[in-house]
Length: 402
Image 1 (cartoon, rainbow, N blue to C red):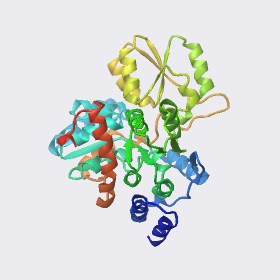
Image 2 (image 1 turned 30 degrees about the vertical axis):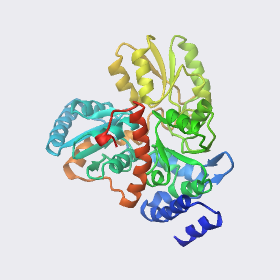
Image 3 (image 1 turned 60 degrees about the vertical axis):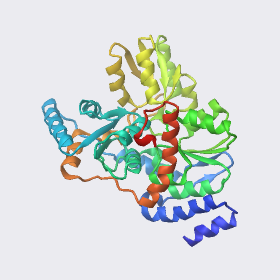
């Protein structure tokens, strides 16, 4: 603790920045082993991820256990038991577009929600259920708990992480943040509770453009973390002055430009839909760029019959549900001289399954817990995001319109 307060004084930081450093000292003691990594190298434009951390993220991806394959009879039995448990425990299932189709279908069948991270956060915050079961990755469960401290939040597997979250550890981020006390710090939702506690705003791909435009119009300079591709796209679209972290999504970073051009040549009648976490050269080939919700709406609303989609393949279930007559092609994640690690599906999203979902409802294990000091700091940045999004009509109004 003492050395962090000394650093704050030596750099002439304002009170907010010094408080962030003091919070950092507490967060390092509470956030576990993922904080114990080398610090990032910085320059005036971005912060680079050290090779040792990148290697660790790759190792986590390779070792992530995929939920087992199940036959139809076993699936039906598990679904019936899960439905009963959800009723008995006053629980609601919230699933991301990228998890297994069986989980997405079950969420909708039981009155839950299938959505992107923005709407997942809003839904859990507005639903009266006493227990929220989050089928997704850990930062999504943490977000639900930050917004709903009075509720029990469960996840099928707490090891389901995210390369963006892992690539933005709180110690390195807080020190970078403290170097620029005159800038507004924006962090993507794909970050830990501890990182959110140091930030000024949380954003998602569904509201980042609007929030950055709003802050830019007010004359603010910004820090952006952790996804470099999304940050670069937003900077190009808005002209905002943003210093950017250099993390990336394991899935979207793998889409290959040349292979995509070859696929477009084979299907010249297809519209190309790209999530902005993809590399700039891939984004430039898109007819539509946007969040998962934007891409789903494009498939449903555009008159075209065929689409090439550059995002996680888990999204195809919702797209096919809403537009069953459309042809969907996944954008290539491998090409000449390259191999894919994710192959267009997040290895941590794939950890969610019917079996471990039932297990957490039976045992009550895998409950998300967040230290109250961290939660109270993190909720400020999340509340700013939700209040802005509700005011702009990006999501439904919340409890007490908080």
